[in-house]
Image 1 (cartoon, rainbow, N blue to C red):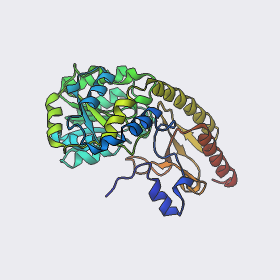
Image 2: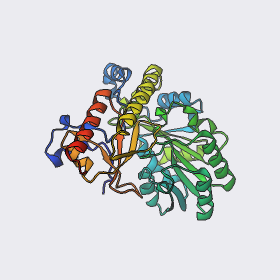
Image 3: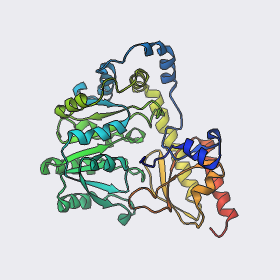
Image 4: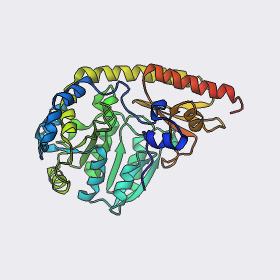
Length: 361
C-alpha cells in the first residue's frame, strides 16, 4: 500500500480526466523558483558521464555536503532521497518505543513500525499546533520512550522549533540515553539556519539529522537526501546495508553543484518569505479560513466552509493537500505550498470565488 503524499499529480489527472499541464500543484512543497540553472547546465555538460558507473563511495558528493555543514565527511551518509534514509535507519537503530508529533510526516512511523517499534503521540492540536518543549519532554518521561523523532520544521504545520528548545531537547535526550532523529527536510527554507542542530553533531552521539535536497533545489525527480551523525558505526552499517550505486550519476552531480549555488539559495529564501507573507495576508481575509503561523515554504489552515475545498479547487485547476491522512487531523485541514506570485494570486482568487459563489459554504 502506498502512503498518500502531495505531488501525485499524475494520479489526480487520471482520476479527474485532466491533463497534467492543466493542474497547478500546490500539494507538493517544492521551491517555486524551480531547478537552478547551475544544475541544468551541469547535467547537460556531463550527460556523457552516464556511460560510467557512479563512484560507489560518492566521495565528491559526501565532501560537498561536509563542507556545506562544516562537519567531517565520515559523518555523512548519502541516500536516494530522504525516504531511503528513513527506511534504512530502523534496520541499524534499535528502538522499542518512539515519541512523535501528531500530526507529522508519516513515513517515520511507517518505517520504524516495520521493525516492531511502538509509538507515543504528542498532540499538537491540543495547543493550537504549537509545541511546548516542556510538555513534550514530560511526555517522553512518562511514556518511557527510548527514541524521539521530530520534524523541524514540522510537516504539515510548518512551524520551526526555536534553537534553545531544540538544545533543551537534545540535552534531555543525551542525559536520558534517548536516541533523537531530527528531520530537517525543510530547514533550508528557514532564514535563521541557526535553528538547525547540524553544528552539534560532535557533542551528541545520539543525534541523527535527516536532510533533503529535493525541496530546496526543486529536484524531486532526481531523489537525493543525506544523514548527518557523529555515530560513525551507524554510518558504516548503513553503507554496508544499502545497495551499491544507489544514487545515480546525475543526482550526485546535482548535489555537488547545488550546494555551492549560494546566490540561488539566497534568492529562494527571499522569494519564499515574500510570497509566504502575501499568501498569509490574503488568505487571512477569507472568513472561512483559519490560518496558522508558518516559518517555511508551505502553509497550514483549517477550512470552515461546508463545501469540499480540495474538490472545488481541482475543478479550477488547482491541487492542494488535504491533511486528513495525517494522524489527529480531519478533512477540514489543508496544506498549500508557496508557489510563484502569479500562481499564488490565482489560488487566492479561486478560493475567493468559491466562497462568493457558494455563499452558504
